[in-house]
Image (cartoon, rainbow, N blue to C red):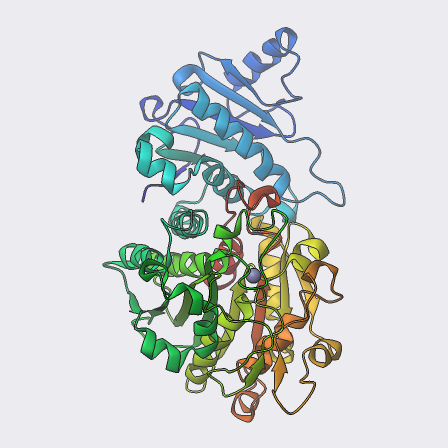
Length: 512
Ligand SMILES: [Zn+2]
C-alpha cells in the first residue's frame, strides 16, 4: 500500500535539488517566498500572468526544483468563519496540478498564519494532498498503482522531523479506510473485506480474528444475522465479524473500544431503497472502514499505555425470500427483544451486537471508552452537513470525550459537531407493548424524522445493554459517531472519494 511519503525538509535551501521535481507554495500572498530569487521571479511573472495570486497557477521557473513552480493562493484566512480547510482545499488543487505537470516528488512550502487555528496547517496540507492523490482500489488493480498514483513523496518544508512519522501512520490509516469504504460491493464482499484487513495487519502488533461460522454468528450476533439472513443463500455474500486488538508492550492506562458498521451493500432489505436511493450503498461500510483505518494508524505508531479493541461487522443487507421484515422481534446478544421497525435501519442492529460484546470486554478494561462509527442516518447529513456528528452519553460528556475529538478535528481539518442525547430519543424507541423491549426505528426516512440521528444512539444504548446495571456501574463513556454527512467528499456517495473521517481526529486525540 503506497501513499506519498511525507518527508520533513528543514528548509528550501537544505533540499537537494535532485531529490525534488516541483515546488508548491501555499500562501495568502506571494510577497515573501522562501527564497529571494523566487520572490523576484513571482513579482515579475505577476505582470505577465494576472492569475497569479488569484488562482492556482503552474509556472516554469528556473529557481524551482524541476523548474516547476505551483503558486496556490489561499484567499483570506483570518475571518471569523475561516478554518484550516481553507488550506486543505488549495493543497488539493495544487497537488493535482503538480501531478498533472508530471511531478512525482514535489516540495510543499506553506506560509503558516500566526493563528491557533492553523497550528497544524502544514500537516493538514499534506493530508489533503494525499486525499486528492488517492485513487480507487479498482482503478489501481486494473491499471497498476504507479500508473494512477505516480506521486511518491511530498517534501514538507519546515515540518518537525518527528512529525513525519505521525503523518505517515495517519495517512496509512486513512488510505486503508478509503480502500475499504470506496470499493464496489463484490470486490469488498464481507469475506474479501475481512481478507483485506488480514493483509493490512499482517506482521503488525494488531491481532486479527475473523469469525465466519454462521452457526456461531447466530449465537453471538443474532441481530447482525437477521440483517445477513437473505445474504446467506449466496456464499460469497455471507457475513464476517472481524476482531482487531492492539495491546501495548507495557501497562495499559486507557482502553478504546470501537464498533464499526460494515454494510458492504445496503439494498434496504425488504424495506427496499427505491427511486434511485440504492446507488452508492456500497459505501455503507464507511464506519467499519474508519475503524480499521484507525487501527492501522495504531499498528504503525504502537502507542504506549493504550489498548485498542475493535469489532467490525461486515454484512450485506440483501433482499430475498428469507429477508427479515419489519414487525419481527429478535433477541439481541444483550438479551434485549428488538422489534424491527424498518429493515433499512440495519446498521444499528449490526452495531448493537458488536457493542454488546465490547460492553462485556469493557467490564475488566482499564479506563475504557466505547465508540460506534457508522454511516448511519441521512438525518446526520441533513442536520450537520459535511461534518461528523457526535452523540455521547453522560459519562462521555463528563469526561469531555466528544469535545476533545471535535477540538482536535477543528485543528486537523476533520471537523465534527456535537449533538446531545435527550430523553425524547429514549421515548421514541420505547416498546409499545410487552411483546418487545425496544423499537429499532420508525417507518419514515431519518432525514424527515425529528432527531433522526440522535434517537438511534438511544436505541444502541438499550439494544447493546449499555443501560443494564453492570454497564451503568462502571459508567462506561460512549460516543456514537455518525459519518453519513462526512464520509465522502462532497456528499456524493456513489462517486465521491471516501474522506476517511474521523480517522485523523481520532489519531490526533489519542495517538499524539
Ligand atoms: Zn439501511
